[in-house]
Amino acid sequence: MYSMGESMSEYMGDSARDQPAEKSAIGSIKGRKVYIRTFGCTYNWGDSRKLGEILKHQGCTLVNSPDEAEVVIVNTCTVVGSTERKVLRELRSLRHHPLYVTGCMAVVQKDAILPACNPVLIHPEEIQSAYRGLGSIPPDTCGIVQACHGCRGSCSYCITRLARGPLMSAGREEILREVRALAGSGVVEIQLTGQDVSAWGMDAGSDLGALLREIHQVPGHFMVRVGMMNPATLHPVLDSVAGAFLGSRVFSMLHLPVQSGSDAVLERMNRGYTTDQVMSIVRRFRELSPEISLHTDIICGYPGETEEDFQETLALLTCMQPDKVNVTRYSPRPMTPAGREKDMPDRFKKERSRILRLHSEVIARARNAAWISRVVPVLITEHPRPGSSMGRTPHYQGVVVMGDLPPGTARKVRLIEDRTYYFVGEVV
Image 1 (cartoon, rainbow, N blue to C red):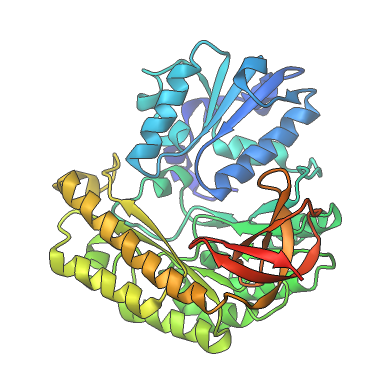
Image 2: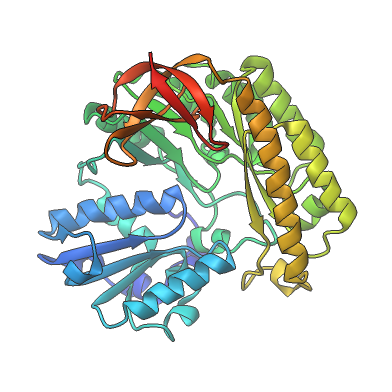
């Protein structure tokens, strides 16, 4: 899937690059009880599911804890410092098991892994290569389709782009084949994922809107959740993608990570867009879908962020009126330009993150108030605990109802209580 020519070795670890396929790290795990521990994003979970299918074809049994396992595989994430520290604690606790490590840290932070344990490293590309041609689908009510990996950006704080490389879109037919297989297996939610989903097709002369319109035509009883889209790559294909969200197959939910409301900070982040472009995206989606749910991400305490910059972020959130805000305190990542900048004292980042969360929750509760007492269609997707069911509205709002309703069940539900990040409802 990489087409990097001579630069491929920059992203491939020595063991993954030099081993012949028949001696691959994954291929050495046969007939064993395997526990897979996954950190990070939906894309990582997609890798772990594919890895599980590969292992089952090699005679392995997947188990639910390391105590039951003969082999442990940890799929790592290093997007922020707190996650990296959590992963390393996990690796140290598992160092006495036969241990394999994959994910982003296996590519770009071997020097951090090896003092914690002595594992076999699996490059994520090895998972993709081994999965091609299997034709099996991980059993679940929620499916993951990896539309693309890598990105077209060069954000100054991001280590993930070093691990995942430049943008490589999965082929249109490959994606549609996976969607058809998942729909045929009874999946009720398909998560279309990537490091930047709106960039899909830009390396192959197509665009995400065209792909979504083809997915609309796939028969089945499922809905598609479109993953995170960078404003820089969404803006050029705005009308095509926003129009495709009108289809009945796509949840009316836009995940648009803006990271800052200050144009000066966005420029230092090298994000490739302005706050005016962000608002033009929001306005266009709401022109077509007035009640669309809007999720965004904010990094607070970026190096050099002034009080004025921070106030501009609060002002942008007020203008955007998002339903959910994921707030992350900035943490320096190795090998990134921002990592060489002077970091802000943690007490400022903590205080700003607290203010951001309170501000965003006020906005969310005000938006949620308009939904209380309304009757909405809900598609049941999971069971969070015995005696209750979790579903999604067409706008991807989470709704908990009493009773063990089978996934895929569609019900009319009255929303009776706002829990800020989800609703409690009653079937009518």
